[in-house]
Amino acid sequence: NDSNTFSHGDIDGLAQKHFSPCMKNIHDKLRHNSHLRHFGRLQYGIGLPYEESLTFWRKAFKNMSDDQFQKGGHPYNIRHSYGLEGKRQNYSPYSCLKIITSNSPGSGDHHGCPFKHFSSENLRPLITEMVCSSSSYSSSSNQVQGNVSEVMNLAKAGHFQVACTRLFEFTHQKNGVLSETIDTIEHPNQYFELSFRGLEN
Ligand code: SF4
Image (cartoon, rainbow, N blue to C red; front, side, top):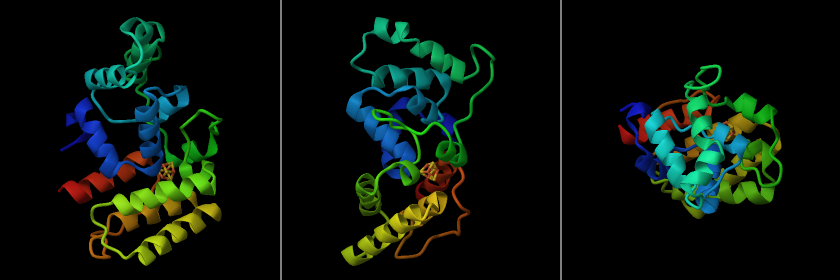
């Protein structure tokens, strides 16, 4: 299965199981608000074919009329990001480094890297939820707390991508064992692909 075969209806299930913390955060906020600001949309690089992407966004902004959706420039922006308008360049979603070092989110923004941009009060529940909801996890609550703390400490020390990698490992092991060693996470898509490959196949 490659990502080009996904449809807009698959995204909620995929987000729950396979999205990186940054993508999961954007997805949850999109579902909660039925809206997402510019940089959030740019960072939210779900690998859907163009037509599916258009349907996905039209449905996601469900409080907008078709007219508002058109006038807000959303169809144009989607075509643009697929290289069908403007410079005709296909914009690939941002790497971790770019997310971590550029465009810090302001209030009301949901892009960015949670390990870098979230306060501890917001980061801890996100990590805890991901650890607790990972289906392959069968640890005692002491272990859950220990693993969450390890990830929190890495983030606090400024090792954002290592924190993300550890979180991936903690949420994708079976009986305490990871099926393969992974390189440090460099891109949200890498997180997704590793997760999808590991759990679905
Ligand atoms: Fe996203 Fe990368 Fe941060 Fe992980 S390290 S949350 S993939 S930006």
